[in-house]
Amino acid sequence: MKGGETVTTYKRSNIIKNIVRVQKLHQRLANIHLEYVKSVVNTVVKTKPMYITIEDLNVKGIMKNRHLSKAVAEQCFYTFKKWLVTKCEQHGIELRQVNRFYPSSKLCSCCGKRKKDLQLKDRTFNCECGTILDRDYNASLNLLQAKEYTLLT
Image (cartoon, rainbow, N blue to C red):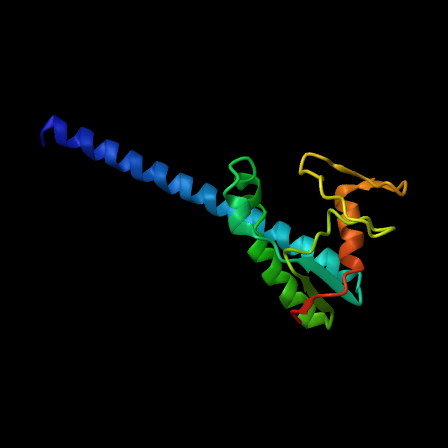
């Protein structure tokens, strides 16, 4: 054997070993994400609500925002929705989906007035009627009161 052949063989085998290590790490992260999604869905379904309302999100549009794309991609929205539909069917829970254009974050959950100038960086919802709520909590109350929806289960 020539010296050059053994060096390239060693380099190649080390590269293959490192590729396998990286693949195992990616698989481990994927398993952690999936178990997290399953545990969240099981926690929600175990409370046995009459119905669950989710919002149809424009994930493709959100992924175009370079500041949000990594965080959104790590949340596995499709997997979450798929597991939620499956578990709701198993437990007989009605799953509702609200249209993506429903202004859940911009409506006041008390008086129903729409706040048009609300931006993503505003984390509290301050209404003229005196209501001061966390933006996400206000949106969840609006989704609870939503009248127009489609049934998924």
